Length: 340
Picture 1 (cartoon, helix red, strand yellow):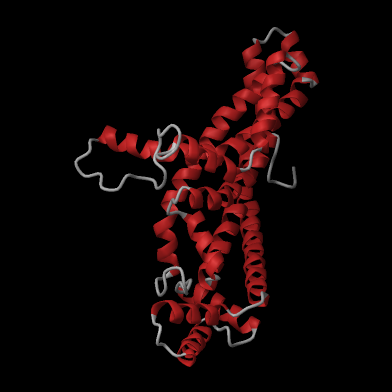
Picture 2 (cartoon, helix red, strand yellow):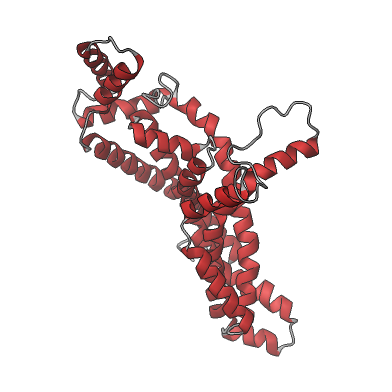
């Protein structure tokens, strides 16, 4: 297993290098000069009397700092050199100018992680039992109702659901039960522990629902199809013929093998939720990684974008590796030893 994990880590590092290289090359090949547009925009907004050539001079300084005045491969080399030699991701060029990118990401990461971890847990806790029930009671009236509701949920766009929640259930809407934005009311000094928990919960409920409903709908259908394939196998019929209780047949024998497809899907759920956070955090004004990604994309903040691309790549590759390890936990017949 150690040898397998070592090979997978090395392969993941190579894949991450390719992802980052392609991301940098595509950003550099995109039309326009982000340094010039940012500096000229700032000169027009901040100082009316600032001359155009002074704005261009500042733009040239920024281009030199970001190595935009050099060939693409030179800029890519300096970025990797700063990362590998000094652990330096650079400084934000526009979102929070001059602030280290690593510090900027770490200030936003906890919020997004809390949202997405809660969403993943809720997704699996609700989706698996619902999928199992639909599989053991197929083609019944309740199964058809569940199927219709899940496909309906899956078809709803995240941004539309978030906006409907805001207009209907948030402050200023038809039924003002939840806050309109943010993850906390502000100053919580003087509040009891239960009041603080309730305040955070009210801010998290709607964003978590927006992040989890589509994944919940899709995962439950995969759980149903996986269980239907397994419960028709010969070993399940044999276990029932031996008089094994039905709950043991379902939850010990059938579900364990049906988990393989759910483990495979786990590799893409977390990166997908992070991508979905861009919309949810933007709508609810949540200061997390999604909101940071939106600002970095709109301002073409190269150092910050490179760090975000790397973060997304690590999540994806890490999810795939965790899935491979969980295969062995779910099914002992799977082995990392190729000689077996």
